[in-house]
Image 1 (cartoon, rainbow, N blue to C red):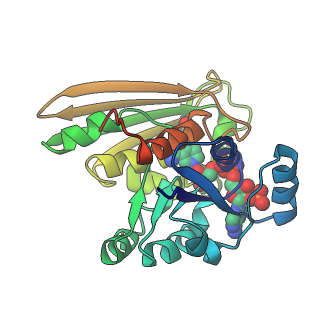
Image 2 (image 1 turned 45 degrees about the vertical axis):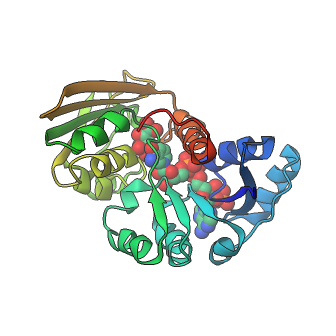
Image 3 (image 1 turned 180 degrees about the vertical axis):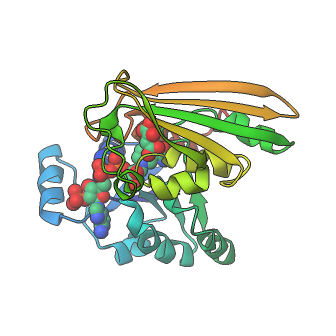
Length: 268
Ligand SMILES: NC(=O)C1=CN([C@@H]2O[C@H](COP(=O)(O)OP(=O)(O)OC[C@H]3O[C@@H](n4cnc5c(N)ncnc54)[C@H](OP(=O)(O)O)[C@@H]3O)[C@@H](O)[C@H]2O)C=CC1
Ligand SMILES: O=C([O-])CC(=O)C(=O)O
């Protein structure tokens, strides 16, 4: 049987870990292409890691892959998804914040037999949330606490003149819907965008975001009330070299990729 060809768009924190694991060998999967911005930097990294893999442009991805792992800046989501989905292929999307204002991408996938896969990423419990969504979910509330460095530069902070430099106590910098949070903090709370897609949607899912100098991890707490169960979940993510991104994110992608071909699947 032919291996499924997996390409990576964006060779940063997540992309490098996924590339390494695919290159080391994952059953039924082969690393078939990488699209990145700085090709010289990417080639130097591939040479250092002894990973043989063609570097391709975003529009060449459909010719090289059955599935693309999108782990690039949110503003190029369209450029990655449209050619793949139009060709009836799969995209695993990490920039979940950028999906919320683009429901047409789901329509494109439907029209051409493609698929968008949003992995659990830096969060937890999408199995229970999607099971509860088969019944009636009354509310999904999330509270995120990050070290100030994990929120620095977010458009909402800049546009509203909110300074988080030198904070000595926790500051609530945002309270609102997942939809508004995704627009306000596009590189910081992809987690709530993904959670909203698993559950009751971006307008009814709510989030508080705190800049907290007392935490060293990206901490997320979720409370779900439904007609089948009430549950509370929390996760404390160790930041990777990119302080905005928890280490577990790339591992979630690897686990999701492994499920694509595994003879045993555990969890919804
Ligand atoms: N769903 C979730 O739970 C989570 C989602 N994320 C999201 O995942 C995405 C990736 O995160 P992360 O790996 O930490 O990000 P990084 O910033 O570490 O890496 C992004 C990479 O994208 C590359 N890139 C920039 N422009 C282009 C382009 N035009 N074409 C191809 N590649 C490009 C950059 O390449 P170069 O180095 O050449 O500039 C960079 O290496 C982000 O959108 C992030 O917000 C993050 C954490 C959790
Ligand atoms: O959602 C994100 O973009 C990242 C995040 O909160 C985390 O890694 O904990």
